[in-house]
Length: 456
Image 1 (cartoon, helix red, strand yellow):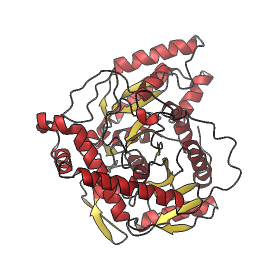
Image 2: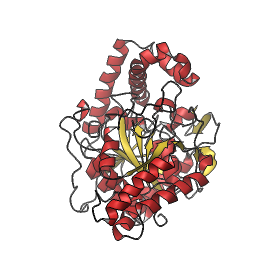
Image 3: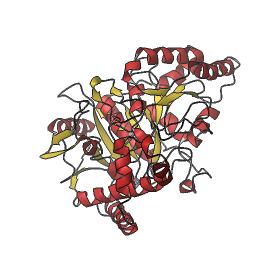
Image 4: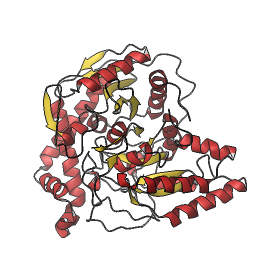
């Protein structure tokens, strides 16, 4: 449930009804950003640029010529999306703040009249899952400022959770949309690989990356996904990709759900109890299947990530190593130690893993997991203990989410009630290839049964 005008969908409805103007929405968002500056959610925020966009949108609305339902709605953009009116730095000193052009998704939003509301903080080069390592300092969690947001799209999640904007853009290589969305108690969607254009989104790992939206409601994601999905000639991975389809009437039959468990998929008692309670609230049968060899599959994801990241940064690392943070530089140097044979072997394991999910688990419409194995860790906390495991905070944040990137499947995270504390817990659903719209519809059914009907 959200307060009035905090969600993108509520703002769009108010604009359509004429009860607010784009200029008012932008002014209010700027005021909230100033009031919550201590969160460190934004890298670049230029009131003059923002208000110029909002004023133009107000003029269009008053003339009865809005460009789309989101014309005049403020949307924040992660700092690895190229933007022509804000600098792009990937929160690293290794990249000057260039303003060359808009990423495809940003251009599509701008053509629809959206107000591009500044750039959000992120883990440097998206190479981490905590959002603690950034050239401008870490982002704090609006739900508890003693805790991290998770990353790498932590600034986007914080801006949405704090009510500064109703929606924001993120990117996801091992959970970087879903991790902070879950830690901050909002919604996030990672499109299936090849459905969404990555053009103009600075890469971390080009065969794992996926851009996607974060919002306060599922309806917010539904409004934004059309700007992500579809073919883009500047991104060959999208060739043949279809634009967002209407998934049809509301789901008439119960979707087939499977919960994944097993060694390597442990979670804390608090998270387990919250997920069991949420699944019970759906009233749907959810059989559990245990997966094996998770350590091998995780190692394959990690090898692909490191090889591709190092390949992308080779020249920059050679010419300006001092521009990278120490941890990011260490990751990139480690990537040099992996051979071409190891990379190809990892890709082979990836194909086996995807086949396992699609062909050996029976018939399913969505796979169910916690988004995170723990609630948001405290700032500076280096280790997490859960399910008999003790792992680094970095690894705990990606504990489940990497499955969606290695397989390329669409994923969505939604907040679920946590009886044990006020800290957010997320439920992740993974859908079938090319079934992004159907996954969103399943999430809508479950969300209504778990959290009640949304205010949009």
